[in-house]
Image (tube, rainbow, N blue to C red; front, side, top):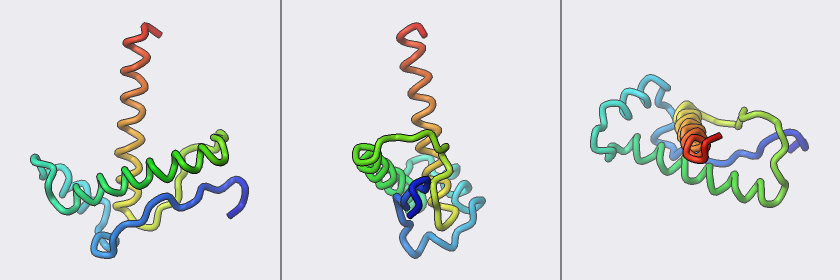
Length: 100
């Protein structure tokens, strides 16, 4: 791994790797209970990504290199997008509560 590359933080289970982005989003959007296998896999991937990212940053620090994280299939990309969206929303919320 080059010094300016992110490591691979998460891996989808084989049964989900062939799903397209549209199929993943459709499954999430039509899962009001949050219990479909696709939704559960997105959440698992998000948690795995966050844990791996934290370990990486603790060991190497965080250099500004953008959020172009390596993914191997659409469900991994969506899991990271959902997590990053959540983090951004929480950051805005915290800042607004602090009056910044």
